[in-house]
Structures are given as C-alpha cells and as structure tokens.
Length: 104
Image (cartoon, rainbow, N blue to C red; front, side, top):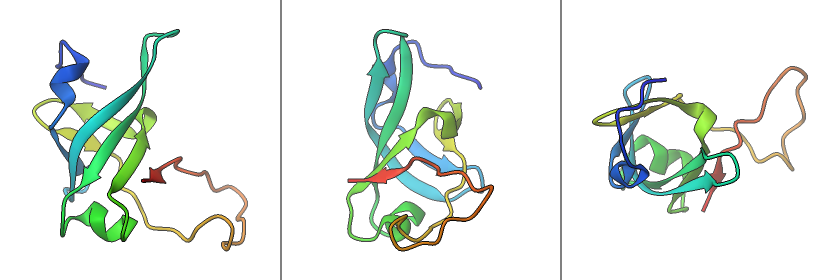
C-alpha cells in the first residue's frame, strides 16, 4: 500500500474515493493504536449526495477499518463497499466476511 504522507494529520480533509471511482466524502479523524504504532481506522464524513451518503442513509459517515484502504496519496482510495442488511435481520451466509464498517 502506497503511503505518501509524513504526518497522520496530513490525512485530515483528504477526499475519499472507492476503487471503482465513487466519491465517498472526506477524512475527519483517524483511530491510532499507539501500542503498535499503527492506524486502526479512518473516520469518513459522508458528503451530501455521494455514494457513501446513499449507503449509510441518515448517518453522518462511517468508520472504515484501515485494512480496507488501498492507497493514500493526494486522495484516499478504499475498497468498494456494497450495502448490506444489518446483521441482526440478515441470515448468516457461510464464507462471507464482515467489512467491519460502522456508521455514526
């Protein structure tokens, strides 16, 4: 994964796109694991009318695990998110993996 930022604070306000080219929003915060010196997740605020705003509905944005980040440069590229039903009401399918994305 290519990272061209020298400071985590340089990531704030960067535009976020999926790897299929859909605009999601902007990074408003990051979660850092200081014991391992690793980024755990990005907090992305959904821009009105964006792909991500349609996915999360009435929520302001999402917390995306860093494992879903493809690239960080002038913009941030994340893996494309497919909307799914909430886990409580959806039947569990074998061989499927949760993305770990949480709305806020």
